[in-house]
Image 1 (cartoon, one colour):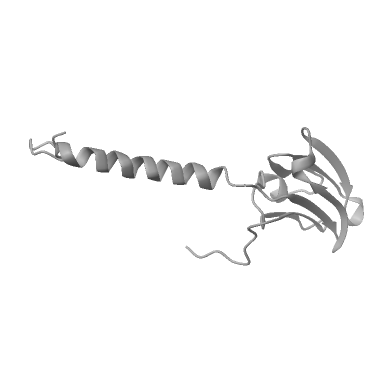
Image 2 (cartoon, helix red, strand yellow):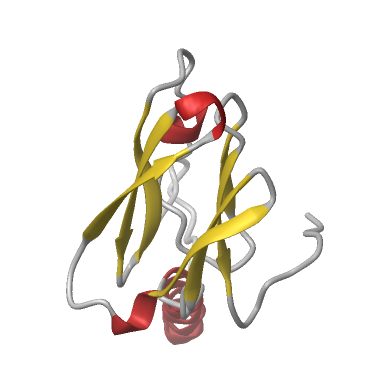
Length: 130
């Protein structure tokens, strides 16, 4: 390989090392993306647990209608790959835009309905540092 000035970027003996590092980085990325997800989805309304489902036991996606505070309807979709708020009767729909929860410790909250969807399981962290 040569750069724009015609100089060599990598010598032949450096190429296997470069490829090994590239392969290791790709493997690490795959491992973090495919790591086990949260094992249980928990739905709470006003601090009371109304639904707990082990995600690994699901055969396919399931939808559950939850009635939150003030009669607000929230639809939660659970699947072996994760959980999400599929629909909500609140005006801003921030909980819907949160998207799929796939790792333990993640959560989606519908504040007007006081509904919390969270994933519990191994690997849940109290905080993350970047």
